[in-house]
Length: 304
Image (cartoon, rainbow, N blue to C red; front, top):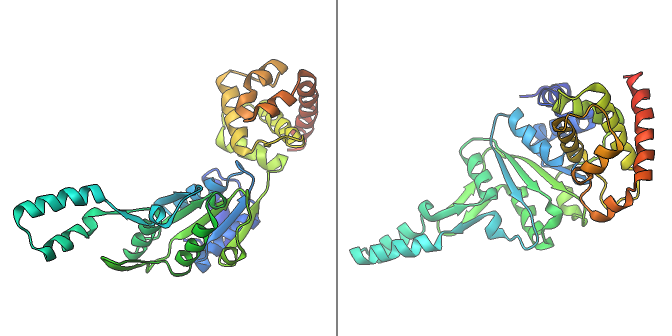
């Protein structure tokens, strides 16, 4: 669908996703070469949003596998609906079905519960290209990572009772990590790697304007400058772009036209998610950040 990197970057922009050319290039190559896109970066910088936007760009389904500690192959691939199988078995026994008929019916697609990985492979087997998002892989165990490596290599799944399902059209795969632990090189080698940084002032301002076009120009610049200053502090968890957009929406809902000490204090819980970080921002610190934000906002306003 996309002949050049510019096509990808323009398509992202049309869907209000502001991306650097390096990211657009990685997405283009991922689609062109059929290789998974591996995205690392701090939480809230837009990694998951890339997969959602890509699904919209390709006009296809997004299949999401949310990783967590203890995730295993059956939860990611498929499971049998044992409760329904037992109920159906009793009904067949009552009707006098043969053993062969019981086995054939019990282990059929009727009782197969396809999980995200199998659903993506099944779509490919049907000739449909979906977007498969493997979100926050660093939260899963190393054993699951090894299993995933095999799936990403072959895009086929063998179900002993039914046979092998093979994707003729491979899904567009996006793997994300917040880097709470290192992902093995073996998996990274099979992917195109990109680190998503916190945005620059100009990029964050463009994101705010794209996602919340109703925001006043002065307030947008002050929010951007304040967030840029806030990330320079020694916080336990610096706010990401997601928090910037949430804060912008909150300030608009409150009818604010500019940042003040009072409104910042009242809405800190939208921006910061740890009490230790909130406690760090005393009135004097907030006032200092506000002054810097106003100066930077005015300076940027004269150049943008």
